[in-house]
Length: 149
Ligand SMILES: O=C(CO)[C@H](O)[C@H](O)COP(=O)(O)O
Image (cartoon, rainbow, N blue to C red; front, side):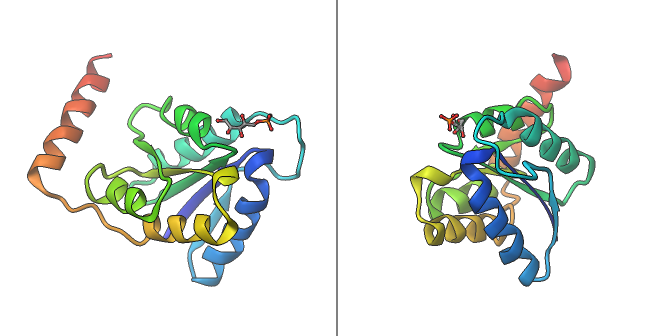
């Protein structure tokens, strides 16, 4: 699978770890920055770049990372058609895929150990959308709204 990953300074260490982790698993990992640690950098451009790339390639997934994951989720969700979910446990990561068909998971690197965050990312990437009609219906309602906007 192709994975798009982005982080600001707060998520930089986790991003570098996950790039290696997912590459070792055979995934094609695309790094959308930050490309070096800069304590003053800003997360929106990195997250929007990852979200645009995911939108262009249905089937790809993305992971955006910051300190809390909140702003990173918000930034990715600015891209129309993207469903980015804050994933803060293995269960919420699985549900984001099963129920919401979220193409992007957002992780707060300051909220978890490296091991916990890796398990959350693994749970997200490894889970398919259930395809259940009730979940698709709810997603379609959001897509309808976006199409009208
Ligand atoms: O989580 C984030 C946004 O939701 C950012 O990573 C966080 O706000 C960065 O904080 P600081 O500039 O104080 O290191």
